[in-house]
Length: 193
Image (cartoon, rainbow, N blue to C red; front, side, top):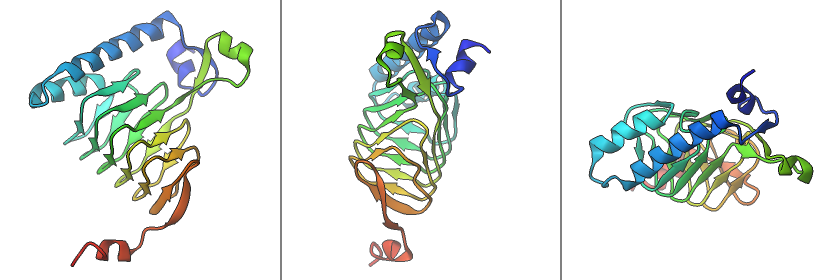
């Protein structure tokens, strides 16, 4: 098993491997280039995002600044909007479904470090995938931690720290993030007057 496969396996691996650092620096340079583009350079932004992101659907908008570790481990569906100051630590796969809205200053962190100080000193870490379903809205300043799945149609309230899976079709918020209630037809009707 190569170091990249080891990184994505969920087991401890050496995050300072030369092969990984090369990929990391390549992606970070691309993020720096992306963040330096004019906001109105739509073609340049699109072209660079398509080189950086592993798989991207139609109508992807990521406002600057944007930061990720590898980019190649990010998969995005159609009609996804990610607002400014998003950080994606994509040591494992990070998947966004279609029609996803992400508010400013959100973080998606697949990487974690051992609790044992001796293992941390050896620069070992692990990574677990994150999955965000279709039609999800994630409020501002939300942190999504390693191994979490957020079900389709759910809303995550601003400032939440998501450490456990969230089912489909619910409003969830808090630290740690918990389900508050199901989203119902009445939620649609309250905006139609």
